[in-house]
Length: 210
Image (cartoon, rainbow, N blue to C red; front, top):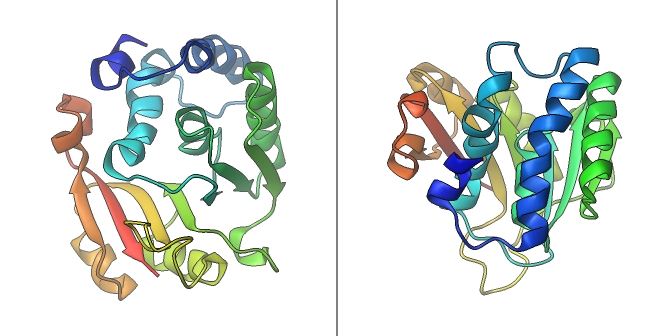
């Protein structure tokens, strides 16, 4: 938890309690349903929570914005972002029902009111639009953009919005080939520039505007 407070300080007492509870809840649920690798569970706050919060460090969202987390898995980046941004709405989607069981249990246990879930593949979601899509190491950028683009509004929520609707995804390694194959020109942010920790070497945020 200390590593979160190293980079963020402006939390309410409710948010602090929600973040603090994550470790115990994920350790307990991970014994039943493996959503976080065994070697990573002890560094949950650095490798999962802070990694997810790099989106919060890099982007400001309009209050009321709706965000879909594609392939949320155990709830990353959606759960940490929902704690950080209580004024936003998060829809966490995954094709594996038992992972969503963990997400729903964690969200319920910490009292998150701004999270909904859906057991589905992103490409099967119809008649819903979002301001942003987020994702964490789920699929190649080409696929993520194909899935997310139809789900995004064409225009920003208000004229004051600094970032257009788009896809924001967390990626790692050499991405040159993946970006080329996607046919997109993402804005790229090195996470180590946001959080200078060794674990974020060669980890990136990619933003593809609609």
